[in-house]
Image 1: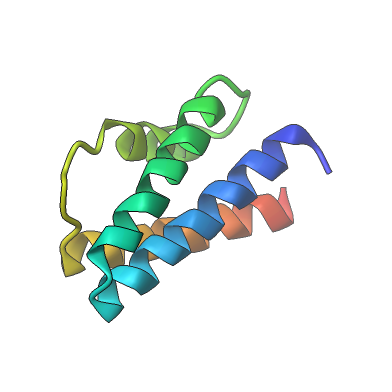
Image 2: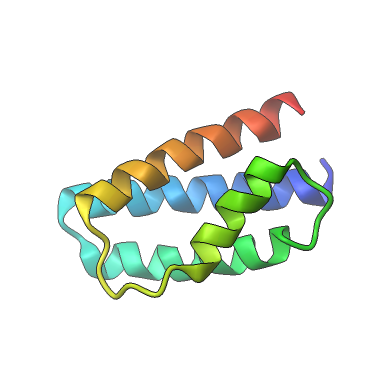
Length: 90
């Protein structure tokens, strides 16, 4: 497995966790995984990847909120699916 796929997969998993925990009402745990997702996203921006993946990583890195809304959680779930597909099929 390439390092890029590992970064994409790790970011995808953390975004799934953020979405799931937010939906369950565990905002503190969701924010912890968001911090981890931002670390993966920051590393991913340095890789040679598709532009839409770079845009997702940039958006995750720039997120400065202290609470994740359900709308944001849905967006992160969608991003997680896109990242997972990229990692599996690229």
